[in-house]
Image (cartoon, rainbow, N blue to C red; front, side, top):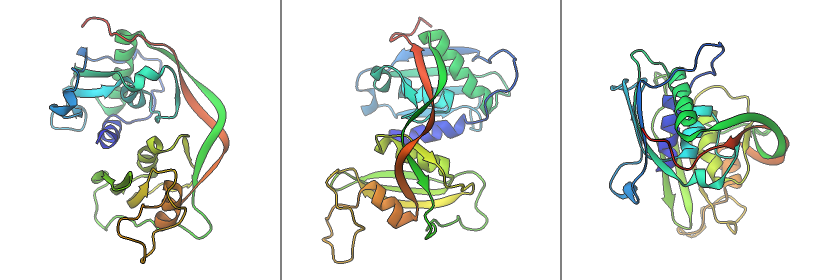
Length: 266
C-alpha cells in the first residue's frame, strides 16, 4: 500500500530542520525520470536504501508522486500544502547516490535540493486559519495499549488492508501519534492537528469505513457479520478512546509558488 510505503519513507528521512546557514547538502549523483505507465503492476512502489538501511549510499524510489517527495522533503502531511492538483498524480522514479556518512536530516534536505534543481520548485511556508480535525483525548481517557516490555525504540510493522464495504483495517505496532495521524490524514478531507499531548509509542488496531452513509455507531455483537464498520470519527473514539473534533485552527501550509511538470535532463 502506498500509504504504508510513504510513512516508511518519511521515517527513513525524518529529522529536525537545519538550524545553520550552511549550504544545503546535495546528492552526489541523482537521476529523475517519469515512472513508466502502469509500472506499479510489475515494479514495487516505494523506496529502498538510504540512511539507516543496509545500503546507506544509494536511495532508490519507484512510482512515487511529486507530492510524496514534497511530504518527505518538507515534513508536511497530505492536506498541508497549496499547489497544483497534478502533483498528486504525476509519478517519478529517483536514483540517488548519497555521500558517505549522510544522516537522516541531510537526506531530507537533499530531496529538497533535488526538487528545486530538477523541477524548478519555489515554495514558502505560510500559516493559515482553516477548518481542521483536532485529535484529542476525551475525559474518559484513551484505550491505546503500550508496546510490550522490551520492545525496540524504533517502530514496528504497519499494515493497512482494505475491508468489505469500502472499509479499512489499520494495525500499527510501537508507533507514535505522528505516524498515526499521517496514516489517517488521507482518509479525511481536512488536516489533523494532534492535541493529545501523547509523546510515547503505542499499538493501534482500528477498523472503519469510508462510506459517508456508514452508521454513526460502534459495531455490536448482534450486527450482521458483513455489516459496514463505523465511520472513521466514530471508530477512533470507540476503539481507541481518542476523539476527532472539527474546528478552526492554525495550520502551517507549504505554498507551491512554482513547479515544472517535466524535470530537467539528468
